[in-house]
Length: 386
Image (cartoon, rainbow, N blue to C red):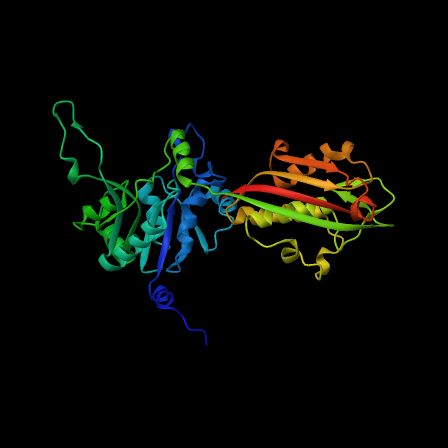
């Protein structure tokens, strides 16, 4: 029997659900859907959701959104490893959250804005802990700038030490939240206001100033700076023997030649080196692990299709391809006239611009197995970020 840690056992005893509020219309973004805006290679909605997946206490994600966007948001959330339930949003934020809360079943509900892509692990943990202890938790940060009140007649600067910026997640006992809904007649833009309306003072949990909400286009630039995406480099190498009665495929392009490369798949040595460089940069193994030659599904496989799958796996793990540089080493045939087509084919398969794909060909001046024409090899170096 596997012995579980105390933290694992506690997570089983504590249950929560994430409600992601995605019903907004992005009117201050000039009509662009801010939840689909890319931030360091991933949509805003994905980055808002992903950090919550680290917590076993969170059993399910409920997304409140316009019904016509369900499929779009589902695609944007590819790689999220929690069950997801979509519910139709309402005309106001309160109505949208209410629809999701009524679909929830766990002890604690964590309500988070889909437009807050920078929520931290520490904030989520603190919010969960406080919600279980106090019944509520409102992520907030102390006001650090001078503020001023003015109603057109009276104008003054209040003591900012008693003011806080309210953020999300806002976490509650589900039963407490339902009680507030049943006993309130107002419609609120913030869930803490809902509790206030029935005489319940929510618990303040200190959060991070980096936990910004994307409201206008300038916020996207700020979010890019805060994500701190890591740059990672991977190297790939492959070699295949030249034999009769095989097609010569390099970079997804068939090259007219009397010999072809021997292998379980189409033996595209250039594309194989590229795939290994991408997987290596992400520390996700190699193509032998992903596409074992013991599996008949990959016998004669088109390596360009395998490359597309490698890129899908990278993006599912939060990575984006920056650029790649590949050198193929072959004494014969001459490859210069095929380089551009190879670059176009590889760029299309990877979903990146051709300017980010470099392919070079060289000989080894008659030296070694490539120089004698026994085989062809390839080196690839790729840069990714995530």
